[in-house]
Image 1 (tube, helix red, strand yellow):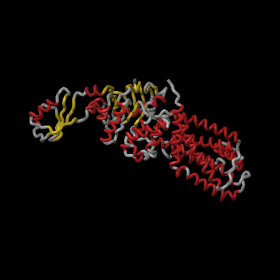
Image 2 (cartoon, rainbow over the protein chains, first blue to last red):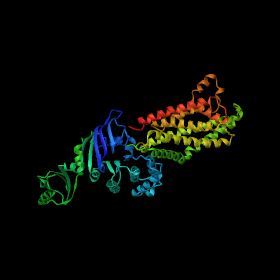
Image 3 (cartoon, chains in turn green, orange):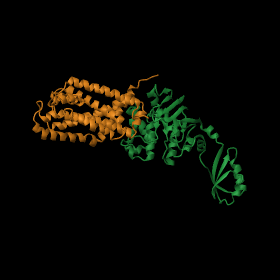
Image 4 (spheres, one colour):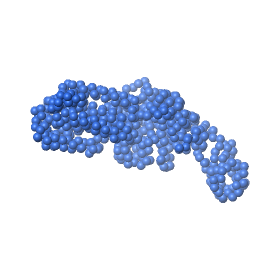
Length: 306
Length: 260
């Protein structure tokens, strides 16, 4: 079954800015889907239209076959949204925020209480349940927004940059949590600036740029298209003679650091053999940027510098 | 396939009303206490100090005469202010999005906020009435008229507060209407005087003021006297409620001030 179907979606703002230009997208039930794009590409507008926060100019959106225009309430009931910005009442207590949201979705107190309690415990917010939300740390606020989005047990969870500004430890624990709820059947759509996050979590991907979908495929096929990768090598000894690297496409960063571009057809073993023969010992190696990032930069047009 | 969502709608409505009541109770020092103090001052200054020199008005002591108007003034001001500040704060802090993404129809959003504002209006009405009892005797001549007019007036001004909040883009803009329109209408709406004291021209001008009908209908409920027809008063209030309800729903449907 299709969890989300978008056909010919257009959005032009009052000032004439065309934010979305004939967007077509389909996300299958159970998928973990990444929607990527540079700032201002149209990701948040797309999510805004799906979640009824932005009025579309034209097009059709269906959520689990419920049309957003004709069957609005049913379509909305399937969706849970974790927005980019904190948007809860800072004066309300954490648990009240969850119970209020559950009430909006028509859950009785008997249904909402145990769900809210379970989510607060799962997301490490139980001790803060009676705290006004404004007193939470940034990471806790992010987790509260996830708990709020899940309190009515949505079939489709949409996360708009959920790990922005979150430390790496918390980010990884959130990844584990999201993988787990996806495994249990919740379809997830994720936008993120951390391409490593999308590569790690998502099975399918769409890249949006200047209001158009420029790529829509599965993650594996996309990564297979990467023909070159750049590696950063830290050398054990300073490189005194640059001729030692003749014949190898490289860029010397400093005396002990070099960047080497490798075709996908070339093997790393071959590279290390050559370096070893020439007496260059490698202390450590890493990708210059993550693989998805390399593709991403190729697919989206560079934006104008301000 | 379409299934009835009436039980869910009822829960959503109750949730909005409960949250609104919890909000004004939580900040009682800002919402419930000031009207009690202000109205006590009105009773002391206008009713006690100045009123004793004015003498009777329409067969009642001046204190008795102004009491219904002062109570009604507190009710309509607070019903208006509650919805205006609560809905605008929800916009300002963006937590109105919690409601907008949820399967809650527009009429329920409006009904929930208006019910919350009406609840505060009635609460304040009760507090100010108790305060008034310290200064004068209050008897109710027509119970149903008294209760109905209080309820309808609170609903009408809660609707006004909602529309103000929809259009407002800053906190200044939710105080402009109360300061420049609501307060003059209230003070010129027969709270402190009978329009029979005015020259004919100003009597006719006063008849254009909707607050005059609320104050006088409420005075009729308590004291049994009114400058205007109570039947007309109900008709005008119901008409205003119908027009403002339609307009508020129209704004919500368009997403004015809410959706891009």
